Image (tube, rainbow, N blue to C red; front, side):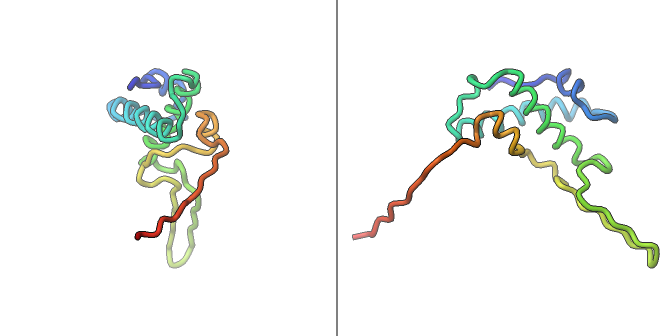
Length: 124
C-alpha cells in the first residue's frame, strides 16, 4: 500500500505551531493504510480516487491525530468558575483516534446509497 501524503504535504497544510516530524513520519503511513482499509471495506478502489483527494484526506486525518495532544486544538467545550476556582475542558478527539469526517468519506466515495437485508434462518 502506498503512502498517500508526504511529510512536505502535511507541513504545507499544517494549521500552525510546531510539527513533531518524527511522529508525523510514523502517523502518515498508518493513516494511509486506514484509508485503504476503509475504502476496501466500502467497496471503493483507492486507485480510482484522485491523488489530490487522497493527499487531502490523509493530511486532515493525520492532523487530527497529531494535534490531539496539543493544547486547545479540538476543544468542544470549556468552562471556568471564579470561586471556588474550578475549570473544565472537553476535547473532540482526546486520544488521537483515526477517523474520517462525513465530507472526507464523501470525497472518497464511501457514503453512497446502500441497501441490505437480513434473512433469518431457523435451525432445524
